[in-house]
Image (cartoon, rainbow, N blue to C red; front, side, top):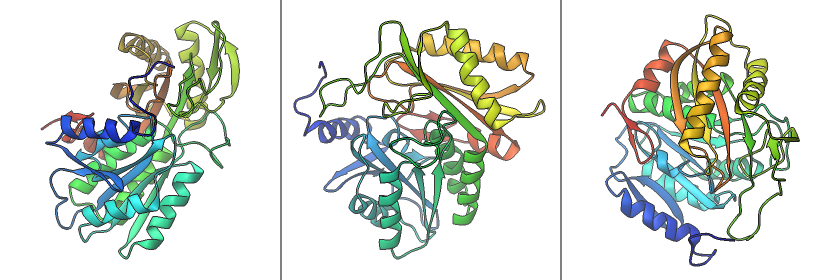
Length: 330
């Protein structure tokens, strides 16, 4: 195993210390327990958006803490759920008399611990659970579909509504709507190596790919021989479109996401391939996002997310945002 680290036990804390120092104008990191909040206090009367999950998916979620997106993020150890204590500590720092919205990916540990935190807190809360992965219905980590890259879309659009004064129920309703109108699927060309494990999560042959892989390296639909980028893109899109069923009049957001080890040149190539396919299907791309946003350590791979849009969601997508990983319109 080759990684830049001093010890697996200190990996998360030292990474967060660097993240906090590099972006101290945007975030403040706390270490006992570990959580990340905005450097500027959440304004009174604003719904507080809190999320979290295992580390290893950076910049999700700490990279999305800031104006127009999240108020707090609770990172667990690599691919491990954060604890309720982390969430309660974050709530105490950011709750501002308008309630708390938890945005939780559909993984058993995350759901259980966020539910415990909701039961422990005194104020009102709601939860948006993302489950956009169309690859498999159940996995070793979930009951039902996995929450993956569309979580980024939910956090941006709902973050905008919260920033503009939306109520707790309005924020939940919009988050559920975005999740329902999103579908994702990924493919891996290599495994990742969890620092504490020191070896690849799974093995792929030199000419193999894992089609429909999860963001923790969970198996997908099948192991297959590697194909051309256009063939891979078409298969991902066809699975998403079959699930999402966009119509010709629908406008969509096309999000090509890297898993951590894929160059941007390849991600833009996938975007080009996806655009050709969607153009042929008369599906209009209204907004785009390309880059490494929901990763799996150093896994070489990519995912595609489609989100159906309307004027409300377009306006919130376009609104100003200033985080470590996403910033525009300021």
